[in-house]
Amino acid sequence: MNLYNIVAKLEGNKKTEEEIVLELKKIMDSSKNKNIIYKINDCLFHKGYSYQFEVRSVAKLQFNNSDYYNIVSNATKSKQKTNELLSYISEVDDFRLTLNAMNFIKIKNLVALGLFDDTIYYIRDNLNDSLYEFYMKLFKVENSELSFFKRELEDWFKNIGLRWLECNYMQFRMDMEYLLFTILKNKNDYLKLNTIKVAFSICPREYLINGDKLYYNKNIHKSLISYLALIDKEEIKRMKDKYNQIIDKLDDTGYKLLYNML
Image (cartoon, rainbow, N blue to C red):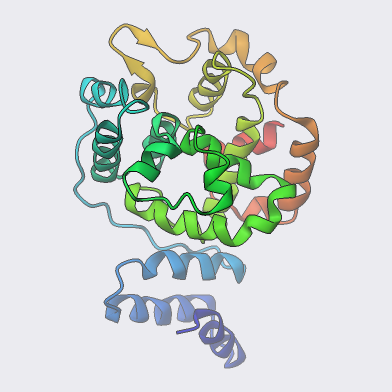
């Protein structure tokens, strides 16, 4: 089913926006594919319509700091703990937590679990990367030859709570994640990255707290501008150029606020 062709035909028949939305709702209600709502919303966005269907929430595992950090503490050293972490973030099903947890998942452990194939050169050459680093490096211009592999990886991410990456709005969010990734030069820089995420409500504070330990700078207002200045300037320009024409159509999130601040 090509939603774009359906909308184009309705437009050709002089249907109003309201009538087009109602027709798409009929398709959504009759479809057995529970994920079609995201494809419809993406179609409406690309066709320039303001309407978006509200996504119904589903019951998930409640996030618990102590449970999460107990699993995370040894996840990089153990394929069993890595598997436990994968199961946990899948059940919580929040892409923001998944992005955080990806820092504690080593590619070599995914290979050991049989989830990744180390005969693929990009995997073989980056076994010691975290999954977050491994993914973010694919957003570099020089990695365009790996675009097919990136799509395959993003399809796998659906298993661990990171979905809808085929949609424009999620690719924008991941591009903003990549800009934040350019800050990272050593382990101490994760504090700076996390502080920006908290400042823009990109990541909930509770995901970055372990007992009395904060994994972000509590003096957010004093440090934010200096941390933002660390983002790669050339990559900022590239992303600005990429989204300049459509930024106003994207949903209002912390990622959009970050884009407008840069």
